[in-house]
View 1: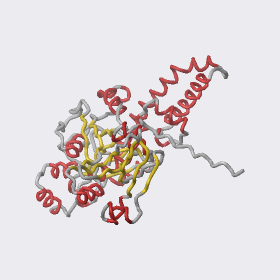
View 2: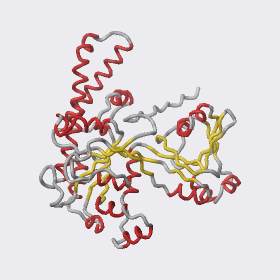
View 3: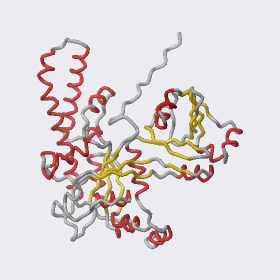
View 4: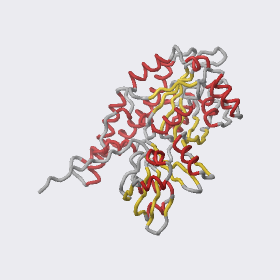
Length: 398
């Protein structure tokens, strides 16, 4: 008999399942969080020069830039173009001691608990007119404060779970039902996670099995969330691409959370650029600053990808649209992003690879070249696929 094929276990992802995920803007007071949020969302959130001016989280959606959607829109000559979106939430500043309730800390930490990823804004500019809550600008210290507060809050939650369940676990002994064994396993996992966090580590940096991750996800831990670091520099430093604090920030990230992304931006630059409505004025503004482009497209795309999100396209006479799904999603999961009825009765999906379509120039030419791909409902969709879903009820979504 031929050997059986090895079954590769699908890796469970840290965090909340689903496509409608949110990313929160986190940092100390007066580092430029609300300024960043105002500019990136074209919203109107208070950005005053004192701590805690933003008390309630503000939420907005920002379009995820993608040149492939622009090409589809131009070539299909449709009336509507709908991009993928990233939901961004502005969260008021944390302070040292927030995990113990200092500075409205408990409320702010609960707001962080409700998001799926973090934009960690750190101040990398000096300005005597903008008060620093710790007295002087020191990015490494600021990063350490936020890192510790999130970790200490996780530690408190894990210790509480262990305290509340230890006695019941000890009473169970080594036997018991399937449910008892499951509870003992979960308890042992949480103890290991607590030990990992107590050593100064973020949960997201651990090497966890699928069973571990399922237990971790039930705890909604703050340090399990992906982080993108954003260094707010002065406009001058942003244009000249030099800043004395950036090497220190990069060193701290490499030592504490290696692999995390660091993106410099300038709140002052982005605010001035966002205030210009006329395209020519924007072009003149950029040209006058050595053609320095906005950092927002890179920030949005990086944040979107940090949540393990991607998008596929539908294109036709009425609309070109990007649909968000998780990386590695099956065709049925992708179809559910559009409508449950399509997913429930899905038979097959016609797929055009974007690069193939662009090279061919049109659907007709692509099909003539034999490049149309037929996929079953259990196949996986890939980033940038142009999909035509065929359902069992004779309906299709293009």
